[in-house]
Image (tube, rainbow, N blue to C red; front, top):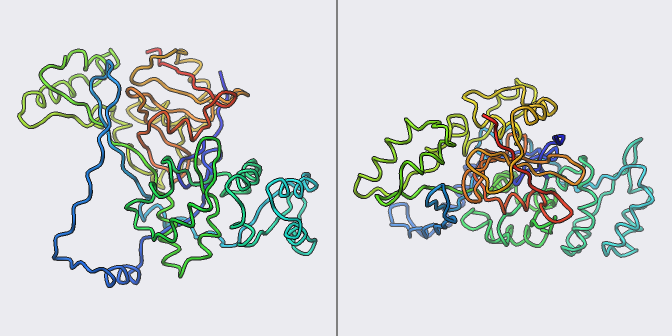
Length: 418
């Protein structure tokens, strides 16, 4: 079996490959900022506000799971979570291992940095060294002059070292553009434009890592905290099972109970009631999940989890899917691996409800795992930190996060023997 490693996250948070990220803080908008927003609004509280456009509804491919549709929405970390993280230093720092000291200048030169600037930022008086690391401090101008391609060269290298927290765990955008990610977020257009200009590609994903630079340009602490909160935005989806009199309830129950009748007694009356009630036509997938994932979905880890010495990660999440109560020992990668060897069989597509999909690197590490629900929808937690919630995501989005491509990670399915 493959050895586990911590996984990256798709959102702002620190990853032990759990995410390119932050150990950062965030708080809600201050009263002063709220007053500013309210005072500049031309619409009174009593006037009818224009209705927001309805989210587009997408349909899954047909299959034994029935007719499933979904729409996207965004989660942001709540105050009780983000308040636990301090605002990061606004000075940008690149950390290199001391052993690669002679590689720094060629790297930056290959990324298009002019010799004049290299001479300045690599000058002995500017570079700080200790026994393990060399620290380089690029200016705002240096950073803003990098093209996305050049930024990717430098930051891909920096991401190999966990000391570069922002490159190691960047903010992931699962949309085609930053503007789409930021829509209806409340972020000022100037901030969205700045994030967009500083974003780059990491594998197939669009990411952002220049958080110190962005915060250094905030007007005040309230705006800095507001920006940090918005950087925790992560796209997820809400799925529903469409039901009508033409659907075979026994077939649907067979799929959503894994063929073993799990929760059949609870789900069957609900399905039949929807079919027989005028005006009702769908059942939220949340009600088809087993007790533990149903409790966790769309929530963030409570601080009480720290009493176990480590926060829940993707492997803890996928291997506890069928458990009524979570098994704490699954936080141990070695023991979790032994559970997969002992209790799971390797399976090929098509996958079915409850299968575990593992993202395996060429060297045999399982950098992520998620639980298959239907079509290409999975239940997942992208990282072992407080800023990453339990989500539903499409397989193509997870593949962006974990660099699934020829020569990179591959997906292997496992099914519980019982």
